Image: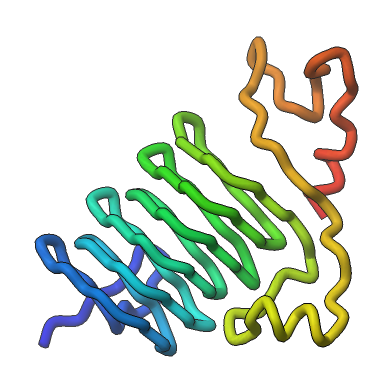
Length: 167
């Protein structure tokens, strides 16, 4: 068996390879990479990587999620979500940190909160435990005239609330 490592040096212990169709629920420790088609649900404290050719129709609950392909479903992340320029997400995202590259297709609501749901926690668990209300509801805004949302005005309003994301 050959060793597979992600760019950050972490060991990829689960792979849904290109040309593979997988239907089901995955609960794992470590890093999952999807380059094929996946339908179901994913739960991990580690990372989930959706490759450029990967397609996932599922709910993802993970520590970190990186999307280079397409995801149709909700993403709940305890650490951060990164959507690469080749990525597409049709669904809601809940995370403490969100990175979206230019060219992304994103259709859904983004909740940016330091009290994001842990991967093992379900929506019902959060409601029963009295989870705090989200700190930020985000709408993705493109750069205008080379200015980031913190620097410029969009629709005549100052976007100072974006600066609080950099905590």
